[in-house]
Length: 335
Image (cartoon, rainbow, N blue to C red; front, side, top):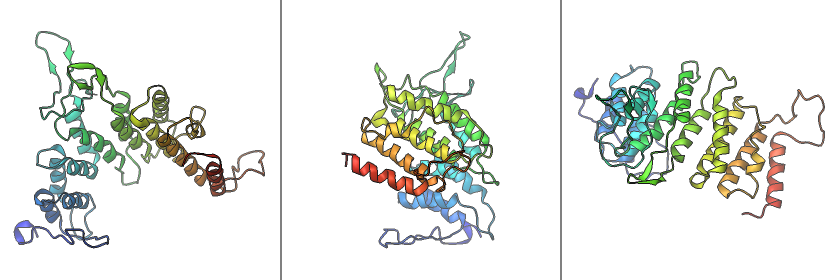
């Protein structure tokens, strides 16, 4: 049955959110597509985008149009707000996400990310031009259209959620995200194009890349440059702090994720207790304390079985986490 065979375009339950309950409903893909394109409610469109991202029911076949509708919504070919475009980005797969990101934010000949320019002007995206009179290539500043900044942050999050049939993340995603992180150019991201002395901060975009790299479920968990690059950004943010220390907060959370996943074991350059001290702002201390507690709770309560000699007075696991929290509450003056 298709959309032309039924008079019902789509079905909504409790459209005004008057019931204090979580509603789960199923309808064919063509109903969700019609709801995504035609409903006037942003909440209903977000619900439709999330439903199209799910696997079809056992008695249904995968609908090719669902992927096309989500791709058009994210690419800006249809009239959708930034929230819908970001939700569509999270719902798509690796092939479409990488292709659209390169179409919007890459230099097509050099295969490198274009310099950041986050201020929207509604103009066309400038991808550079090859001069006919010169052999050198001029890479111009990217002129972001409305909503492109949210898409640039949402695509890494969508890539981090992609999984193979085996349950692991494709290794190409880590390579691509690392390229975006290491080749990020914010030197031309001026608040006012006429004033080259004030550069806009790209901390939220970098934070999205950092956290996306940390949640990848890789099959080969060998030492990778991911932890080294995140550690470098953490130390750099100590010297040149970002807005509200956003980079430091994201790096601490990301390194904790990598350590819990077994992808980061070198702790010589990172001390969570250092960032939990009163010398740092409260937002940094909160991220460091949360990382310390997460690592304590992930420990074996019996301690390290490979250690040659154990200190019987030392506690591990949840007991160590509770002990650390109580000592912190007793000694810390900050509320």
